Image 1: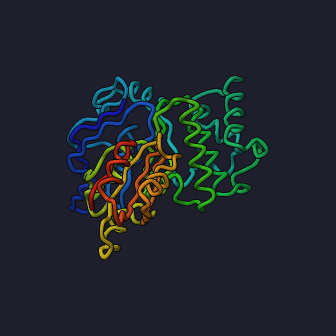
Image 2: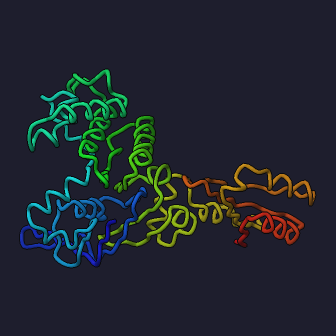
Image 3: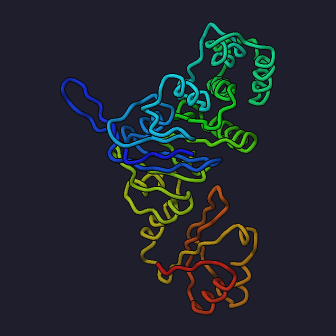
Length: 328
């Protein structure tokens, strides 16, 4: 679907060079939600803009769909590629003198005449994002969350196969963020599209992403399934980002060094709703103390627990039930 191979990007200003991307390689799978996270200046927005040709690059290749090394595409091929990719922006990028309907139709009207089927599609998309009653309103009547919903509807007007989201929630309040993320997840499922989302907020990754790429100083420092990166972070930057949403179990372990017999439990969806901890505690008449517990968007879980006695019996019983038990 998307293959970025050993790409470097250098900005030159006032005879100075800034390495925005340094030998970056990344594969993004079809029909997934892939998050790219990092602090300001990490290179994440530059990376996402490579995918639809908004940024060029000095070294490496970017392949999207059947198009190889898209920087070399002719004008017609580049136009066809961009038509298959939707874009959602941090600042909404709505035209203030256009209505909601007119803004959603912009990608079509700017290139030609709007047909009746286009008009109906725009109305359907506006209904999908929950703004039917605002269809003839102007952006100044809308809240930030509503403006972003217009942006989402607009990004879908050309039936894209890829949806690029550049910090789509950074200007929104927490309640609105949740509703926008739920909408994106619903759209991914409904339209079977690939979503690539750039963010500095690990909450966004936790809520909707299948895969996550962590960037720092123009380089990819960690990459993989969300649950793998969340529960086995290697780099300090990743651990710091996870701490912001209370998902750094290593921090819990370090803060409870005085507690002996600590264990980390990893478990999957099949036993999430079971009472395995209670059952094992009762069976061996031992109180298992839960120090930390969390669940990923893919419904996999982790716990940090203390097992004060009957340790080997409890370990064996948990592992027999499908729980992975690791000594701290």
